[in-house]
Image (cartoon, rainbow, N blue to C red; front, side, top):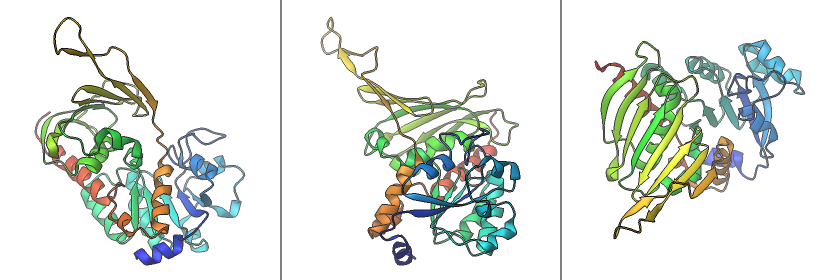
Amino acid sequence: MILKLQKNLLNKKKYTVFLIGLGKVGYGNLKNKPSLKSHYYYLKRSKNFSLKYLFDLNRKNLNKVKNFKKENKIEYYRQLNNIKKTDITVISVPSNANLEVITQLKKFKILSDVIILEKPVSNNLKIFKKIEKILKNKIILINYQRSWNEFYDNIFKDKKNLNIYHIYNNGFLNNCSHMIALLIKYFGKWISYKFLFKNNSGHRDPNYNLVLYFKNNNKCILNGVNNSRVNVFETLIYDENKIIELKSGATNYNERNPKKFKHIKNYYLLNEKNEKNLLINDNPYVGILRLLKEISKKKVKTFKMVNFPSLPIARNIITLADNLKNDKKI
């Protein structure tokens, strides 16, 4: 499998892509142009990817896309019989539709060797296992784009004694799982957890409050709230003598460092103002392109998927969500 994939990708100037799903993440909710953070927007503007086919069961979504060959727009599963297998398939549909889409791709023998899936892949472990079985021996990337970003190496890599506080809403699987995937990448699966309580318990995807304990004495408090109309994804990281803030959906990095307090010996206070303010590039295709280049250069160690989120990471998160649902605390 590895050698075959390397041969297919070796020295390619462009990687062909099949985009399935033109909703909010696939194309955006704008009528006449794609959202700036959509798959379509990045793929069309990249010199490294060639978008070959679009597929959506909703004709209105296909009609939003202008200047694209009509014959390469697909709105029925039977039309999959008329297309060629691409290097990459991006599946950007609701989680409950993933199994059906993947099953159809297998049926028509056009499952790409590299597949990008939206988180959380599935809403329960039973369906997840069926998807995992079909995609055996494929390179699977879950769209936890922060986990593909080398920027976070400076924050988390090889760190000890980190105290992390993360506040979120809009669901444990839908939103909080981004942060958990990032922590698993750097710390491995949690050693233990302490469940506190859950908000909006009647929802399909509640906001859970819990503490995750990792190796090297790293700890993360996950605080799920349900009293905000805006999307909440904010993080505070206490790293010995400084505080790091990941704000605005983790697209902004702020750092406050200690300053000596003049009146007391060996006494320090954190500065009031941020000493570092940086924007974080959360374009997922930066990470994808890096992976493909490593594959094409025959760096076999890449296939250990150490630096990229994979199905095992998603499986751990979904298993945790299933366990939390059964807890009696509310």
